[in-house]
Length: 634
Image (tube, rainbow, N blue to C red; front, side, top):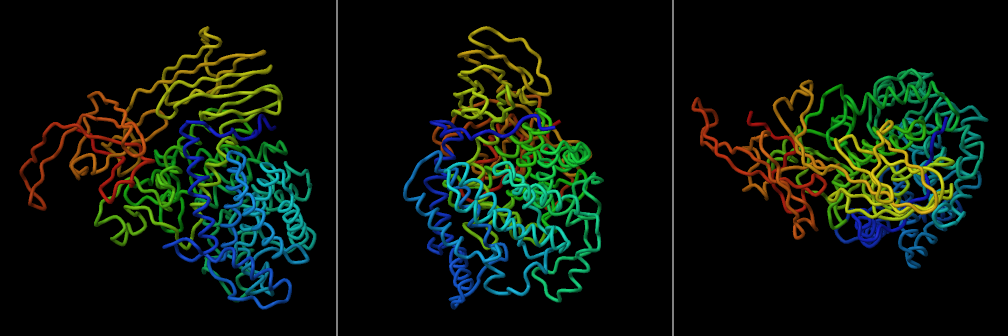
């Protein structure tokens, strides 16, 4: 059933938008996060991540465990995601110092593995007798999944097998527990499913495939498993409700699932594993379930920024069309997971909408999750903030006006780092005779089918994408749904082909130059009237970028603005603003302020220009108001 698969990631994007972010991750984010893992980052909350592995190694050797375990039960995963980010970054920017740091950390992790293959610092240090007794809450399988992904990255990007061998041994242990010894149960926090599929494709080890199948096929079939587990163990981590099948995505067998429910990150990690397994095995029933879940998310529960999981209560999906901008949760990790899901859906069926959503999530919510200097991070991504309310009142304490530094539950920063470092894996795909260009980024890539491609573009601010191609076969170029017009030339000659499922397929032989020009005209976007808070509102977009209005550009006040959607939006390059961006000027009306809380007098309105910057850049110029959605004047 597999139509295409991910290919090797693009090389460093010299001078391009993605290249700038990859360089930032390499030079700032990865070193900073390494200092955090080692408790050496000034002003950052103690993480104890590396120390946990050192202490677990002592426990394995029967030595004193030093200062014991500290942190969240899933703390090991921070190290795994850092290793993955560093491995992909090293392919872009070779660095012997960083490479040695990775090797040394892997040595520490390998020394923390038990003889039977078990690897988890929390239980090795604190509660060895409680292993595998709290599948619902304890994140053993989640941490294993992230370490499997790190192992695959080291092997794929650096050609190093040490961590891969450690995790193959760990998978054998987990396989014995769950498949051979019939322990029962399935991950409380899905993640290992998608990781096992990665390892299977890399190694061909059938245990990885069978274990992924077991967890996916078992989930939702025994709806009382977590209840029995809870009654038997007499201890807890978080106090999760074992009977809340919706929250755990376990209320129904996955092949019967139709609505995205529960914890948003867990959901999209699970759906990624499902889509990957469907592509690998040709399981059309499983893929049909994935399509239903995809539609549930993207057509009824997704913010215009590609954010998902609208409620702070459980970091979860709530219900269809419940997408309030000011109390939004929209966790950064959830949009990263949505990109994973989209990329695996493309392996089953090459459809432009999957890549469109992947792009929407990346250029908006994912990038907004990291400050432009790479040192501060959003966990939550609201579409409206008002200082004095956001981050203060009970209903909006989670919606902050400024990015924090590091924090105790630090899943998002290393997640963003690993995604940005491996961006080429999402930008490109391939089949036996076709190179697929899903996303646009300056750089180069060599496909396994023999096609080589380099891309020149200033995207997402510029809308010309030039490909220089060598090899024989086809190049499939995505035409984004937002670009109502486009032109395409091959070796200077116009191509008048209509997109098929969002892609134009171009035969190539020898050397070719393909030039795609997209429509960079700014546009107003309107929400469905089914979304309660957004009736009569509009947002502004240009290309893949959603824009927002900040007080700093609008006299400190965006709440009194109303957009005149009959007017023309102007575009201005701002090389000195926010590291270099494009600002939009939108015709608007400003409502006069009044000292009265309520008045029967119609407020005066004056014409003005409202200025907007890309949503991914907001919150970098101090605390001020921000809105994506603005009421319209007519």
